[in-house]
Length: 165
Length: 121
Image (cartoon, rainbow over all chains, first blue to last red; front, top):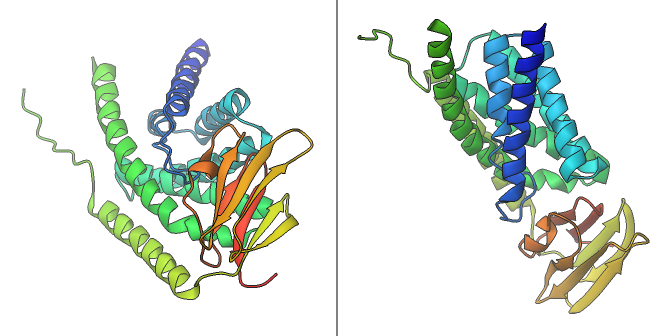
């Protein structure tokens, strides 16, 4: 039980720090939702290491809530909440059916996170025309997912090495 | 100590996934481009209520202010609509490029403000 508490704390702290750093250096290319999404590295590590959907949801939701209250408004919380929920759920399912590598799962997670946010924005703002952002969000989701996926892959290999010692 | 197991960072399925996703985005993009053309009006809505319908052929600059002192400055110039100033925390709306084709939007999420190009009022 205490192992759980301490490892949860590490995961949440890491996820929050990644989001914090991203918020400090925003890539201002004028399109909402385009970001590297390094916090996803932590979610992926939780999915692969702990292998329980409850843990993944817990870390993901706690991160969204913490970041939402620290950096954003209630609405930004809603957008990232929807994105994270969709992304984490599908990432876990895809991980279980073992169809893709870590990078593939990460790409799926990144793209779905963006799509989740886009759909929420479309609903809240009742502007179907926002679908016009879909191509950019897919491409940036692929790029971000690839980067974070590779980082996660190497991280997981090293975590396994440490466990073996 | 030799490791006999070679781990790749990507599998075949991942490449298929990327290609499929890229196809979806290319098809969506082409569809949207084909269906859109230069618009006539910039419709400004806050919280889904239309507050301005601005014809794109007359240059104007409007500072839109809400009760809680949040503002966005919408500018129409050369047939394009743009947000030039805002006091929202992320300034995504300000950095957005100017829009002129139907269906294009500039959104200020924190202020729930949407500038949308349309053919009609």
